[in-house]
Length: 302
Image: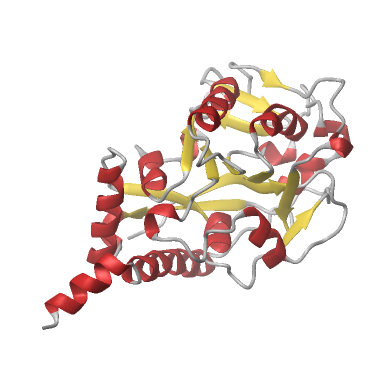
């Protein structure tokens, strides 16, 4: 089916580290289970935050069936409260790594919004505020996957966002702006901020459940039923999440590096399609290696 590309913010935040670390090392620390887990536990310990206008209907149910904690709202206060509540209510599956599928606002702030009209629900938060508010409940890695995400780490907006950046994407904050407090010192932070290797326009892709192999759909349906969920017909997934989940060799990550320049670089449609197919193939592979499906396959072959 035709892919729908959406610009978003996605990046792992490491405020204390000032060096470039090998991507596989960062991922091994931040998302340990990804290469080894069963389908229903691929996202164990990982939370995903979606801006509503970068998502699809009931998208969180897809990710929750895969074991992620999922949050979607145009209000950062709501999201922060939901993450706090989730970690308190799920001590054995706390969110340790948070993937932020939000807008980067050309690198002027992490934005959640319901739509593009000035009066739509919308809120912003600084990277420092995320760290300050979520470290106390156990979040150690922040994955901010956003357009021009490297610009979000600029010292002048790291703690407190500029209310008048002169950018047409910085629309009215109808649900407020959240900054770090003056007492927060990122150098003492215990969380890690990891960004893409280059600042660019991030993309999310929309796919259909029908594109998955039948055994994978069966495994996902079983996982969803186990958690009291009904799977959606479509799902949205970012290219960076795909690269991390599949351990794409082309993935590059940085820690503690900010970027000044605004970039218009974007993945080609051909590269986006390759990544999407890699994601689908990975889910099919993980489902096929599960003991339950292997037993069913062996029984059917007799």
